[in-house]
Length: 97
Length: 119
Image (tube, rainbow over all chains, first blue to last red; front, top):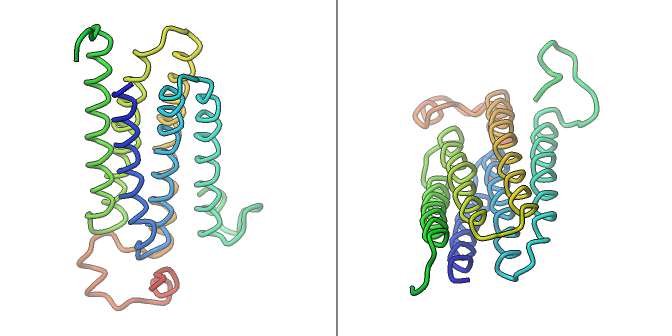
């Protein structure tokens, strides 16, 4: 039980440090990077909390959060770059992010 | 610290290592100079920090489905973290962020840099 608490505290410290960059980042890409790191650490925090609570069913939520975090980061990156989500712009190199 | 089995010792080693790499990577996100080097800190959090903590959790269960779910989370992080970093660095290059801190100080900031920096 103590090791789960130690892991949760370390993950919370890392999330706080990453959120500092998300608040103070000079460009929008720094903020996207910091929020992506915070999301990845949230996945680990949900898993650790499941073990800490004695209910490992929380791992399903962590699995879903990993997928949603990836899709959300790529969507925000594409929106910042193209200012649209649904269609490729003109040019040979614009379809992919 | 009494009655720790061999799996508990392995878990402690993995979790302490993962906590070290997560905190050092998060410090790198704060202290490194520009976006391309901050991605290195984010990559350390994504790979070694998360993997070692999750591997440490894998030694603490006796149900095979929990083991498989933890392995799936590790696999998804292993696939999505490089993809996200690739997309983000490509968007940053196309968005006008100069690689290297000295170049951006010497050059005059153009319109794209003014639009992207929310100062």
